[in-house]
Image 1: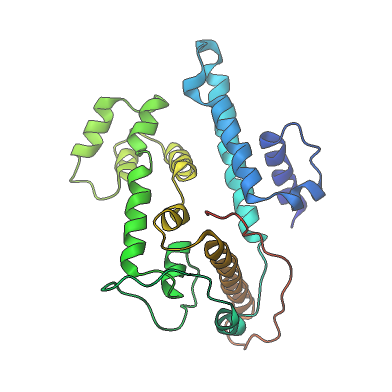
Image 2 (image 1 turned 180 degrees about the vertical axis):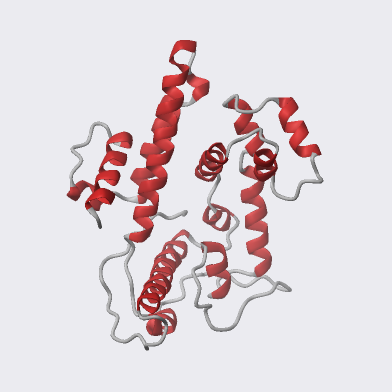
Length: 270
């Protein structure tokens, strides 16, 4: 890590954890759940809607923006900090791990039976590819998650970045290819920076897929924790192999990669 990168991460920590003694050790000990809690507290504290005094609105908006950027920076750091295993041992690790899913398969639904793809995966697809849930269950979980996620237009109106007339214009501009946010940017109603902040905030507010799977008895909480750890190991293996292949120019066979540390995937419903 470069000194400049470390300084940026330290500043981000001071933004989200103002009462903490921010050191390199503090940075190394940050966990995903504590980061999310700190970010949510700052959102409640500096949210533009919480400002009754017009004179303080600009100051709160700036602090809110800095909190969002600090969370994004630290979240990327946590992803890069995850452990690595040698890629060729992925299937061995998967085969040797105990199957903790105690629920029976749903009749007439499609279950995957094949090798694990050598790409980074999200938890829903990972559970499908290890045979824990059906393809139909993945689709239902994603639809449930989408329906509970606050629409971008609603968030933008709450923050007074858009008005109801703007939302109607964006929805009616079907000739413009893209999502709601992409249309808003193309119409000049939102900036690219505003869209990124909205998308990040929207993701932090959505319910995780794991909660749906446990609530609908498709997985036990214990098995979900187990698969989350496996997923962290799998994605770390893929990332490590990609980095080494890139540094080797893709011409050398990668040998003797070893486990480098403990994983950071204990949050049950990520």
